[in-house]
Amino acid sequence: MSEGANPFESLQSQIDEAAAHLEIGDDVIERLKHPERVLETNLTVELDDGSLGRFKAFRSQFNGDRGPYKGGIRYHPGVTRDEVKALSGWMVYKCATVGIPYGGGKGGIVIDPDEYSTAELERITRAFATELRPLIGEDRDIPAPDVNTGQREMNWIKDTYETLENTTEPGVITGKNIASGGSAGRVEATGRSTVIAAREAFDYLGKDLDGATVAVQGYGNAGWIAAKLIDEMGATVVAASDSSGGIYNPDGFDPVEAKAHKNETGSVVGYEESTEEITNADVLTMDVDLLIPAALENAIDGDLAEDVKADVISEAANGPLTPEADRVLEDSDVFVVPDILANAGGVTVSYFEWVQNRQRFYWSEEKVNEELEGIIVDAFDALVETYEEHDLSNPRTAAYVVAIQRVADAAEEAGTFP
Ligand code: NAD
Image (cartoon, rainbow, N blue to C red):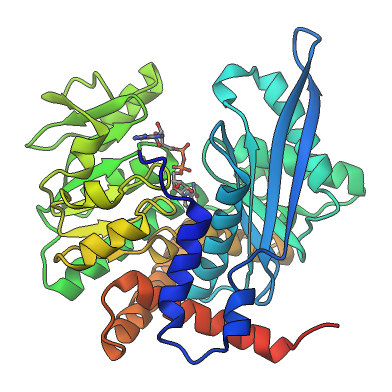
């Protein structure tokens, strides 16, 4: 994975690229390139051995013109202030791309969660929730899971907030488990939109998904669900990787069994249906029909992009391609379905969860999936329309053109205060 590109600078260059096709004043564009506020805090938490641990944490609220700030919380040793700012900005444009009424936010703690016990992680999470308390709320800012966080952490944050506020407000956070007010279909939603978007791209390009070969980089929540669903659609998953390495079988393997192996051993590596162990770079440059990057940002930089052989990339991860990689790929025939559309299923079903929480009325999984399908297909159609109308060089710029226009319209309607 390339350490090179600063994700916040990548976001700003993506905005500039799209703004060149829009008639929006530079002053408004400038505003749309920076977060409204960033919380930086140091959590002091007692560890199991009685010592005190200190953990740096952030929450960035990028833009609230279209609704409350919305975005996940990441636990990773590589979390930085600029990374969180970038991720919060991508949330703004993601929510606008799929037309759901949210702005964007993102949070993170600089931590390797594998080094801490469950009890320590609970205390760390509750300490962060306490810091977040004045900033969040179902009409203010609604966190969700991201890398290395899931239902467990969301339940802790909800419980901390509700206890301190002496209320019941499940819509303060999404990605909860069902018993705590979660939505059917939320866990699968990111992988599901990634494959719906891939299917639409194949359709658009006149390519057949049935029998298409697929490589998946990152085998966590987003990646492994995408692998499972694309396999169910008739494609063949031939390669997958996680932070320990990659597996390959030219005839394909069972993505569910590969996940079971990872659950048991901690990695896909060593899975018995794999005929060859490969590197993460091998997965990204494999000669497949579809590549799904589902790990972290900057997975493919300009150099690696020269070797990408996939026909379609559907970005489950946020920011997996650097701007240089985009430039290289736009000169080739690779069609990139951008993250702000491909992985928007996560936030879309989070939105459904929030709607259900507010209505105290819960939907079936069938209804969730049907509504999600409609939103992603509509967003893809809007992207293609803009892509063709403006004769753009890549689909990412088309998504940003659609999204920036929507955010700028809301900002301009609201005016400036004071
Ligand atoms: P996760 O923690 O469940 O999984 C991450 C996976 O990536 C793990 O399998 C890990 O081993 C692997 N990985 C890490 N470094 C790697 C490397 N260098 N090479 C190969 N694999 C590597 O996280 P997730 O929730 O699946 O998130 C993955 C990506 O999807 C992130 O970019 C996240 O922002 C994005 N995303 C997630 C959601 C969601 O709802 N979970 C929604 C939108 C976007």
